[in-house]
Structure formats: structure tokens, C-alpha cells
Image (cartoon, rainbow, N blue to C red):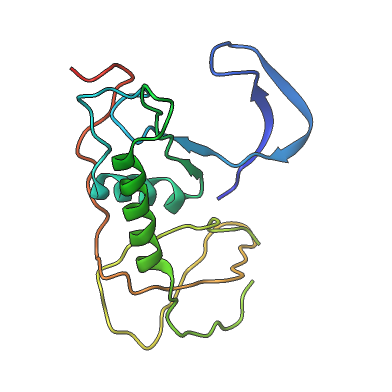
Amino acid sequence: MNYVVAETSFSNYTVHSSTLADALHLPPECDVSLRRGWFWHPDDKPKELDHLLAIYYRSIGLGPNLLANPPPDTRGLIPNEDVARLGEFSAEVRRRFQTPLAASQGAVAAGTVGSQRIHVLEPVKAATLIIRLEGRDPVLTAVTAFSTGVGSVPEINYLATTEAPG
């Protein structure tokens, strides 16, 4: 994926932008809250593991960085249940992607599929994987495959608002 821009906004809150002298690399960022809203609320819980995995595949898996943003509670601390959920999430991501499958890569040729790009496929047994690249002078420098034990991306259970839970 190409994250090169020639113009950028000053902020999300204005219509002002600036044209850059040279096009610069500007990777995207997926900024989400670990909970439904941006602020801690006693009646709210952290997102379920599958919901976080769905966000992971739709953020990291498309190239952006992911910020989970656990909100501090009224003591100014990250609640234990949030710390536990982040630990569970981290452990599951490591389990899925810690051990690449043995493979070799043949000849490669200008462009990128994307850093950390994840394609989820139904499990198959194969001796050869053919990847067809399109565009002007594409180049593929590396491919890594993992047997994650899953064949689909989890669904997102709800779209969070920025309001406090009801």
C-alpha cells in the first residue's frame, strides 16, 4: 500500500491543509478505545477478544498502526480487567503469528502489497502459492505465511460511539 502524500491537514478539526514541497511517507493510524467510549465508566467493560481481533485484522492487517487506548479509571490507573484483556489480546496475536511456515521465495520484480498486510484464507494444503501482481512494474520482496488456526476474520460486534455507555 502506498502511504505517500503531497498534502496534509493541520488537524481533524479544521479545513486548513498544507501542500508539501515533496511527497512524504505518512503511514495511517487506527485510533480506537479499548472500551465502547473514550472514557472509563463503571458500567462499561473492555471490548471482547474477538472484537479486538476483528479490529486488528482491519487495522494492522491493512497496514496502519493500532492504538488500543485503555482509559484510566477514577484512580488514574488502567483497570485490572483492561490490563488482563490487553494481555489476552497480545497472547492471541502472538499465538497466531509467532511461527511462520517454512517456505522459499523465487524471483521477485516495483510497489508494495503493504507492511504487515494480512490476507486470511481458508486452510488448504498446497505445494505452490502463486501471487499475481498488478500495476506498473510491481515488486514483491517478501511473503510470510502462518497457520493461525482460523479461516476468517472475526466480525465487529458493534460500532462504538464517543458517548458514555447508557
